[in-house]
Image (cartoon, rainbow, N blue to C red; front, side):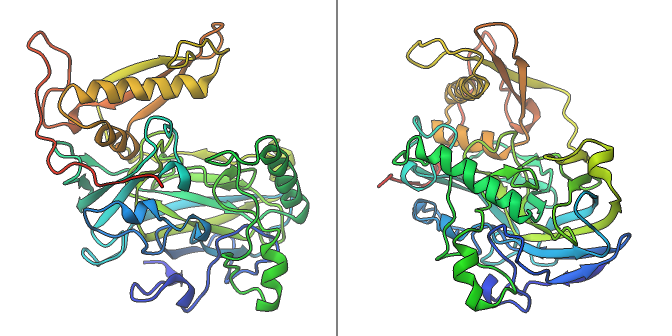
Length: 418
């Protein structure tokens, strides 16, 4: 096993650990450890809410999820010799739930969760249709996930970090704040908001001197979106065996990682849409000197996915176009067409006895494939959602005999938006 350079004690809160991570992006957050090119190392990761979501049959914790506190990131880790303009090469050697802890109160101790956030606290991809909070607990049996809240399905997890990236430079951070602030200004009272501005009160800034937390927290970027540094990309294929090339913007690169997922569907459509968990990740790092210019990589990460994906041979797929639910035509709106494809899949699954929220939670957690199938045929973008048929313990295909009726069980816990 590689050396653990960021250990976490499951009996302590994130802020009380031996080494303190962070929940904002800023170039002044100092590294917690330094590694050399070619080094392999292990990092423990806490799930993004640090234990606020519990294994029960209530959704009150999702309703009141402390979004101002996320994400709980491990790092930053400086890489010796990395300089702005380089590419940081990161190999994911292994990733999984909390080792040797198959039961306990923390997500990652034999279980994880998927949530639909309430409109007034985060919202989601389909918040107009699902304004309330819902939750599904998933139990892990080796690589397989099952849920008492979404019965009659099981699937192998494609475990991956939802969030990993390098630190921004001061100039890049200013660019983020400027452009996201301009977006917010177009509709400052929107619920959910268009973007998340800096928020210093709940900022955790690692080993930065405490008398600097107020100043830095007031300008540090929230970790919710993907950006030029990678960040919260939520790419389910960043699994074991993946190699990623990150732009370097500061000396040392200052790599951070967190938000581990046991499984996720493309798009993580419920926002808390993966199966969230804590765990570990083993990494190896290297540097390509001057790689950003050499390969034209200035505002994006490149990755080569691993080869541990569950193998599915049969799928049922649903399409959607860029026409709103009330019949308004939009021009090549791929976001809308993917929403419509997801809604068609949800509606289909309700014919088998699932509640709409159970189907929605399933699409967020299971390894569905989302595709932009057509983006040039004006005026309709076409998106598609592929669901592997083998995850169900019944025949989910259309037939002359009609849909099999499942017992939906206790259903997904709900807490009304307020």
